[in-house]
Each structure stands twice: as structure tokens, then as C-alpha cells.
Image (cartoon, rainbow, N blue to C red; front, side, top):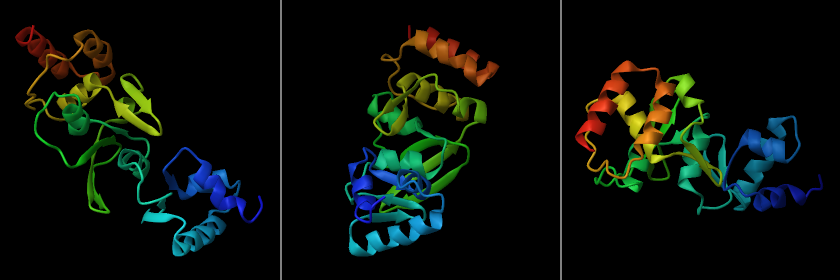
Length: 191
């Protein structure tokens, strides 16, 4: 790769957020140390924006949902972020909530990210997950079930928009009898 091509390769990418490994792959470099030196140069020059250790963005106008799914992988946007967007809960949620393999609270550039641990077999199952650009998001039915999985007493403000057939299609991935009982009770109460 030519000297001037490194930055232009990143800027042409459809991603707005990159890990060091992503960049090394785009630059076709086996050594991430070399990539880090070049990245530090671009950050000092103002051509790239450093978000946190190992994470960079093309500019300050990066996609926060994309960043959320790049911090820890595998992960996807779920819980209150999706429930609010889809109208299942009415409370304003500033924190971006993410299903992940660990539980963490992180703040990057003034935005709070809440990672909630989900068992691996559920986390890596793509049923009820959609990809929008570079971001994986739970459907409202998957976010509903993810939330019930972690909190069986969660209060939902509006369940009318749920597709109960989709809920039943996704439910088996949790292998959880308690959830089946709760879902059947909610269907009975909202039908």
C-alpha cells in the first residue's frame, strides 16, 4: 500500500468506528504495532479521532450505536434502547444498552454505555437480530425477551405492537421455562 493510501482507505470505508484489528486488516498489515504508530500520527494530525484505547473514528460525528457494538464483541443493541425506540416503554433512556458477554458501565465522550451479560448461546444466536449498516440491533420482540431474561418483573408500558408469533419463534433460544410462563401470562393479559 502506498504512503498516502492508508488514510484514504479508512475514509472510504462504510464504517465510522474502527478497532486496531479492523484497521490492520484494511491496511493488510500483520503487525498491529505498525498500525498503532500510523494511527497515533493521524490522530495528532487531526485526521482521525481517538475514542478510547483501541477504538478510532473517522470524525467526531461517529455513529454511537456502531461504537457500542465495537467496544466488546460479540454484542448487539437491545434492552431499553430498543424498547424506547419501539414504544414498549415510555421513559427516556440516555444510556445505550447493549447485550454482551460481560456486564460493564462505560462512558465515552459523554455518552453512557451499559453492557448486560447474556449467556453465550443466546448472545451468538442471530434470531431476532437485524443489521442496520455496521450495527446489530435486536428486534422489539428480541429486546422484549432479552429484558425478561434478565428481569422477570420488568414493567412494559405498551405491548400492543409486539408480534406474539415472533416472540414464540425467538423464545426457545433462551431454554428457560420461567420465561415461557411469563410470556404466556402476558399474552393472556394483552389479548
